[in-house]
Amino acid sequence: MLTLWVGFLALVFVLLALDLGVFNRKDHEIGIREAFGWTAFWIALALVFNAALYVFYKHHWMGLGLDPRFPSDGPQAAMLFFTAYVVEKSLSLDNIFVMALIFSYFSIPLKYQHRVLFWGIVGALVLRGVMIGAGVVLIQKFTWMIYVFGGILVVTAIKMATSGDEEVEPEKNPLLRLVRRWFPVVTRFEGHRFFVRENGRLAATPLLLALVVVESTDVVFAVDSIPAVIAVTHDPFLVFTSNVFAILGLRSLYFALAAVMNKFRYLKASLVFVLGFIGVKMLLSHHVHISTAISMGVIGAALTIGIIGSVIASYLGETPRRTESGGRIPLGERLTEKKLRKVWIAASGGTLILIGLTLLVLPGPGSLVLAGGFAVLATEFTWAAVVTRHIRRHAVALAERTKTATK
Image (cartoon, rainbow, N blue to C red; front, side, top):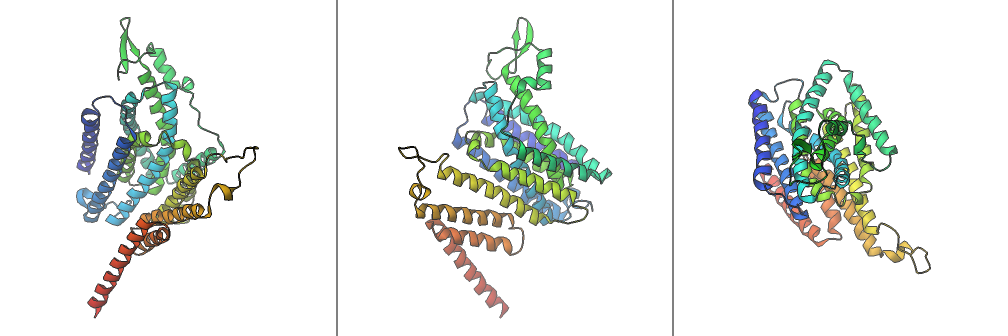
């Protein structure tokens, strides 16, 4: 088991070294296309690792799946990792907007933001590893701790639901005050350096101040997200690896979404629901069993509804247009019936597809829901009609082969 942990940490070290030492050796502004490309890469890598976990747990390689307290087979382990990854990835979305505010506060140039996030994530991996280890040990030693973690999530959900927009006040950050007490601070940037020599003394640059605030902010977010992931599984390897892959992709996701996060107006409501749902699940865990598949479906549906609702709201317009006299233009005049129908079909079909993807690990329902989603989209979109025809053709061929084999 120790070999497995060392091997995974070595893999993470190699990925980080390639990221900073090869692909992002030179400071540059990361564009939308590059950001989305890296986001797709990190997500694909997480899915490949999930497939590897399926095999490792199925065959009990390196002792995985032999502990009776944790998942014992491949499908269960893969589903738990995927659920934990989605939960952590979703909760990290709220962190993106805060990062943008921090960089804006310290006026960090775009070409240096990646380096700050890189070292912030390295620190986050270490701190989260310690917090995850402590959380899992507490759950195993004191079963009543699950109620404490569940209560934390419910309280956090209530606070998120009743609070206003995020505000960043770095001057009140105790760690930042400590840095300023230890080091003089310069206002200029010296490339991507965190320290410079000023009058013979080591002085901190704005990059270090931003790094300190980013790091301390992540700890605050981890207090909420780690209990949420522990609610999915108590297996420390699955909890840690899902956290790591979610965090590794956070930098690219930040550059891809930071500029448009304010467009996802209903995403916060979805995150509130997810936190509340997981918190209640933890509080009821000793009395009511909610399967991983059901949890994944509920979480996926909540996030999908929030995202699609935000897209529709943005599509309809941030603010209603008005007539020359100042009155509102009726909705029927702003949007044709055909356009409204297109939006509704896209939302309905997209929701079914995403729910179907989360249920693919189950025999039957995932495939049926996925096919239903494409069928709904096919009533309006040509590409979906083509996909639906392919699905129907393969389904008929499979039925014929099954019928021939049973004769």
